[in-house]
Image (tube, rainbow, N blue to C red; front, top):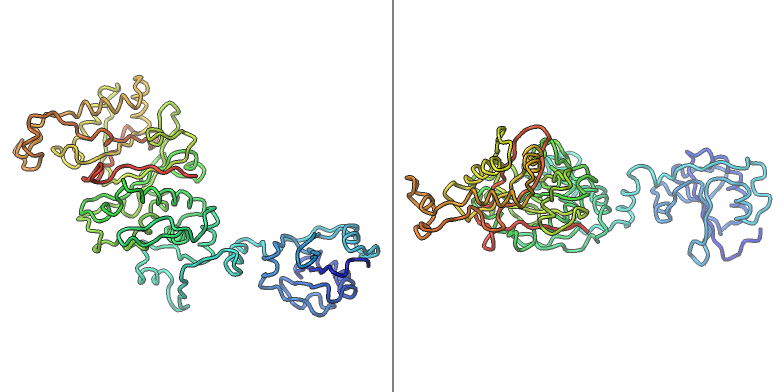
Length: 480
């Protein structure tokens, strides 16, 4: 043998591999020839091969993980402590050339493929990354006693929103973190109401608890960054006695890529991405920011969207701009928008067959947002179903024309809206009596599209009564 005396070798085997068992004579010959220059690592049975003494027990797979072993057997040459080259499987000519030993393994077949490394078993890479430092996690780890029900432990520690959560094990958190190229210790912002710093890792922990798949995590981060934009006023939204909570609208290619629902029952249950992305945001403000019902969360009634309210836009009509495009983005951009919504108000119009009638019909329903006599205080998000959108498109109207017609239909003399008008004490101050008023501020009505293709029903998501510069504004965050 003419190998350099400075070279060191490592041979990785496992007993549960026919090729590893086949090459036992070769391993024995190498051990005899190389002596202290060779270490044999065994992934499953430290007694294998029985004919060779001094094996290294790698059943914890630490060596295999750090050296990225994909196949066994693998033979690695190290020079000056660094890997210079490797071979794997069994190819007699290759092994002879690699070791400069012409007769090595002459009695064996010419070729046999190797087997998968145990370090590449399903789920094992994430476990090893956590165990051996490949995935650094700074969060404090809590040990749950074997006698304690894990789900009940989450309830008792106040980690849930009232529904069961997925326990955030280190492996699950590592998988979530791996879905983003951002570092785990990066601070994404301070979460109200306590304004506690939120790292990417803490966001990942709550995404795990919400039930997210790792591929949803970049959307969760975009939603979180949107919620932290000052115009959204997340702190005020949490503290209000009103109904509102964050509504997450996802536009662009990412919604299809991760399987979000923009069609049948888009605002309802049944889609994991829709349900868990919105839920992540709510768990983050509870578990990191300290915003809990009965504490700083003072909602008189609240709404079911406080568990989760998230859906994708229906962008099947390429001539109809998405909400994100209204905000200055392109159809190729993946964008997360947030709106302070207070629930769903149905709009049923099964008779209108022209744009003029349908616009007036939608306006009649929008008039009652917050209250029929409350103008200029609440924004709204109108979610048009495909069939209602089709009425406008077939009538030759574009989205801007729809919005303009709705605004025009909603213009109302102030004398009908002031306090006491119509025998109703609620209303606007007397100073507005001689003015004609718009229901919404100039940028207060937003239009998105979603829903099934059957059913002449659309939906109004009313906003927070504190809208605009003094309250909450719809915000958008592009994914990068």
